Each structure stands twice: as C-alpha cells, then as structure tokens.
Amino acid sequence: MSEDLGRRAELAANLGDVRSRIATACGAAGRRPQDVTLIAVTKTWPTADCVHLRELGVVDLAENRDREARQKAQQTLGVVGAVRWHFVGQLQTNKARSVASYASVVQSVDRAALVTALSQGAVRAERVVQVLVQVSLGADGDPHRGGADPHLLPELADQVESADGLVLGGLMAVAPLGDDPLPAFTRLAELGGALVRQHPQATMLSAGMSGDLEAAILAGATHVRVGTALLGPRAAVLG
Ligand SMILES: *Cc1c(COP(=O)(O)O)cnc(C)c1O
Image (cartoon, rainbow, N blue to C red; front, side, top):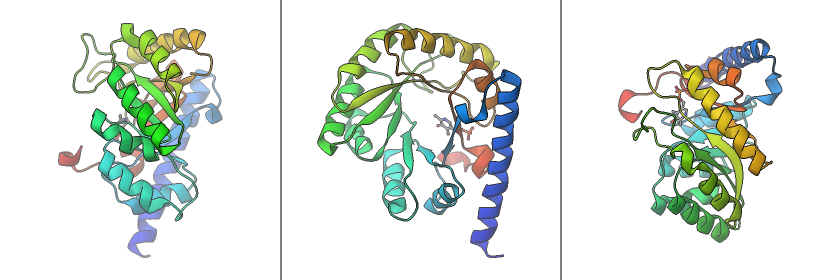
C-alpha cells in the first residue's frame, strides 16, 4: 500500500471513530447525529490531508492561520468538491481582508474593529461571510484563547447584523483549560438562546474539540471542531 493510501485509510478509520463518538453522544443527549456538523481542523497538516478528508465526505474544514488557510483554500480549489472553510484562530484586523476572500465562516470574531475589517473584505471580494462571535467562558477572561466578554455580545451581534457582506451565524467558544467543560458549554448554550431571540437565524453553536465533544453535544453544540482525533497529534511547536 502506498504511503498516500495508508494515510487515507488512517483518516478514514479516525473519521469512522469520530462519527461514532458523535452518534453516541447524540444518542445520550436525545439528539439526531445529522444536527451536529463535524468540522475537521486541518491546521499544520498538509493539503493532501484536506483532499483526503473532503473525498471522504467532510465538507467543513478549519484553519487558524491566514497564510496556511489561504494556501490550502487555493490548492484545493478545483481539485476536490467545494470546501466550506472556517477560520477559527485569533485574527488581526490587517489579515481580515485576506480571510474574507476565502473563508465561508469566521468563528473567531471578538471585537468591533474586526467586524468592520471583515465587512470591508467581504464587500471587496463580493462575498457573504458568515460570522460567529467567539465568547470567552473563562472565569476572568482567557486572553490566550480569545473571545469577547459575554456582556459585549448583544452589541457585537447587532454590529455584525448591520454590516454589509456579513451574516450572523451564532456563537463559538473554547472551554477553559482544566475545568469540567460541561458548565462552560451550558453557559454558551444559554447565551446562544438569548442571541436567537434577537437574531432568529443565528442558531450555530460551535463548541467541542477532540477531548470534549461529548460534553459540547450534550449542551447543544451544532458544530464540533475536531483536529487531533481525526488527523493525529500535531507537532507541539506548531500548536
Ligand atoms: C486546534 C483547534 C481545534 C481542534 O483541537 P483538537 O483538540 O486537536 O481537536 C478546535 N478549535 C480551535 C479554535 C482550534 O484552534
């Protein structure tokens, strides 16, 4: 078996495992597996892995750095079926225009300046970009993981809604390190419930990664972002 076929078989097996974890978690939560979208976080892995995953049926892929994301978006264009690229990393305003040129969803929007910059980028690219507001769920904020303080949510959501080229999709969060993730994800779902009352289409809740996707699904996540469990451990330096 060639190296490439070996890798593809490995990814297919991991994908099967992750899909069955999602199905089991949905069963326990009384939810339907088709109501939870799997997003493969391909950061640090080669474009060939993105192609394998897309061919194995994963449409949603995520990256956290603009340069790497843009390259992969270009390299997969026309090679595989359409990919829905999600941007999930902390984003500088000066990279927003680039990200708006290829991302379908930007999940890490946590401040007003970024909304303005993404809107300008989307308009320039003649695209519509879906935006998730990233919420900080740490006790006193968590500067390393990013995210807006929950009390800023209503204002940021209104700003996204009124920005040209942007559509408000919902909320994203990363569970605080070390704690039981369920209370944090439950808090996120409550914030999402309040958001939906003001913005009925903003139903996405992006929560849960390789280590805590079950808790996220129990709390109501509509999207889980899985890297390690699909692709293997990343080189530590590249995070
Ligand atoms: C890397 C990353 C993930 C995936 O994490 P794993 O633990 O490898 O599944 C999910 N969300 C964000 C924002 C990430 O940066």
